[in-house]
Image (cartoon, rainbow, N blue to C red; front, side, top):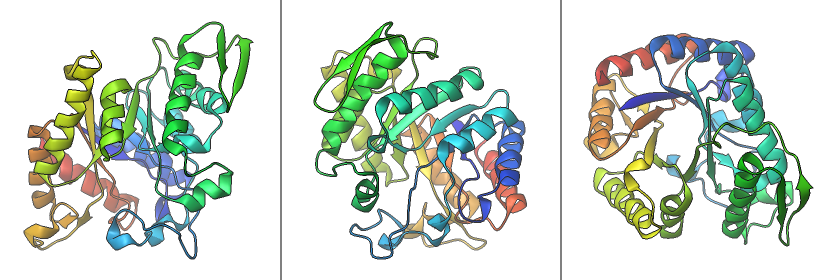
Length: 301
C-alpha cells in the first residue's frame, strides 16, 4: 500500500507558501502521490445536499484554489511524487481545453500526472458553468472519448452533437496516454470504472461496502474483456483526528491516528493500493498538517 496526501489547496491552506511547503515536504517524507480537488463556489442556499459532513458544505471550502494552478506549483516544487486529481468535475470543462491543461502539467512534471474525474454533486456549480445537469453521465463518457483521442491519436478528429474537432495536430501528448481514474459509487459509475478506467477513486466506506463495490468493478472489467488485476484503487480519507479515542461508529470519519490507521490497514487488505489522506479539515496549520502526515506514515509503515 502506498500513501498519498491531499495538497494544500483550501481553507487556511490556500496560499502559495502552503502549496510549496506541503508538496516539497510530502515528497521528502516519502508520500507516493499529491492530489487536488475541484470546487467552484459555495451556494448560500444549495439545491443539493453535500455528500458528507452531515450534508453541510465545510466552511473551509469557502476558499478553494484552482486545481490546475496548484498542480503546476507542486510540479515545480517536486521531482518524483505523482500528481493527481481527486477529483476534477470533468463535465465543467471543454474537453480539448481540459486535455491541453492536463497534458501540459504532465509535460512540465516529467510524466507524473494521473487524471481523476468525477461527476460532482452540485447542480448549482453546473448551472454556473452553463452545463446541463441532467445529461452529465453521457457527457462524461463523451469527454473521456475525446480526451483519449487528444492524448493518443495523430491527427485528432472528433464529432458529436456537443463538439466538433476537425482533423488536427494536437500536442503535447502524454507518452503512452495518461492514466485515467474515475470516482463514483452508483452501479453505473462502478461499471464505467471497470469498463474504461485505469483505477477507482474510492472513499473511506465501511469495509464490507468497499469490498462489494470493488468486486463489482472487477466484474465489470472482466465483462469488458479487461484484466481486473491491472486496476488500482485509491481510497480517500478526510478524517478529523482526535487526541482521545472516538467511538468506533465514528471511525474513520473521526478518531485517533491509531484508530484511523487501523481502518486504513483493513482497507489495504480489502484492495486499496493507495490511501489518499486529506488532513486540511483537521490540521491547524502547515506544521500540524505535516506532523499528522508523519504520524500516519509511521503508523502505517
